[in-house]
Image (cartoon, rainbow, N blue to C red):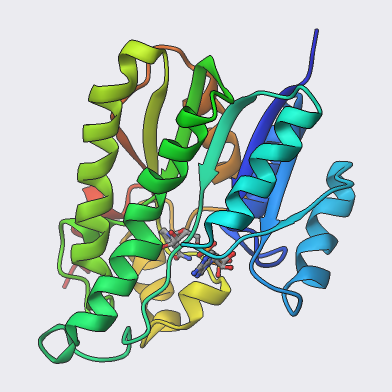
Length: 254
Ligand SMILES: NC(=O)c1ccc[n+]([C@@H]2O[C@H](COP(=O)([O-])OP(=O)(O)OC[C@H]3O[C@@H](n4cnc5c(N)ncnc54)[C@H](O)[C@@H]3O)[C@@H](O)[C@H]2O)c1
């Protein structure tokens, strides 16, 4: 059976959620085609991708069309088509500010990087005709999309936009056989996570709120990602992987 191909955008280091997803996809028979943000990030990304048989990595910063076209040119030159695209990127320059203090410039930039980039990249892949029928797009959201989580500030509304884009793209692209979904994991200690004010407390709150008493592991998020990516009946959905934390209000007995 031929190995499938997955473009994975969002590995910063071994703690990245996209690293956990790439590892499970590799185990499920996918070639991983990863990008990295810049030269500074490259050695940390390689620590992940060296374990996944990856020879070629591509620089990619949201909005750099030449970089995206270089990925597409590589696919074409090597007669490769994609079966999966993992969109695991987020950025918010004013994440530490309260929502009502955030500038439009920062909100706009965050929306582009963390949400609309999924549309831009999918659009380029479709135009270049490098997505196989039956292929799958997966992005990463958070419960802050519909609950005001203290410290999550501007990213809450941005994740709402992202989830709405998932539904919109899923509706539009179903006719091309392309499915679009999101996972919504509980908090994970990553570089992006550590930028959020009070993140260690958030981890503790999520762990205490879970009936299971812990938060999601990268491996569990990765195996769920493989299921969502490969299951032909899953489309336009945001799946929680949060150990039940958001389904429960826990009260200490007096
Ligand atoms: N860590 C958590 O608790 C958590 C929970 C739920 C959802 N998420 C989401 O998971 C996704 C991955 O984040 P993570 O927690 O693994 O953190 P991470 O820091 O490991 O990954 C974030 C990635 O975004 C990339 N990125 C940022 N700006 C970019 C730009 N301009 N162009 C291209 N790439 C850019 C970074 O290079 C990095 O690879 C994000 O969408 C995040 O919001 C994280």
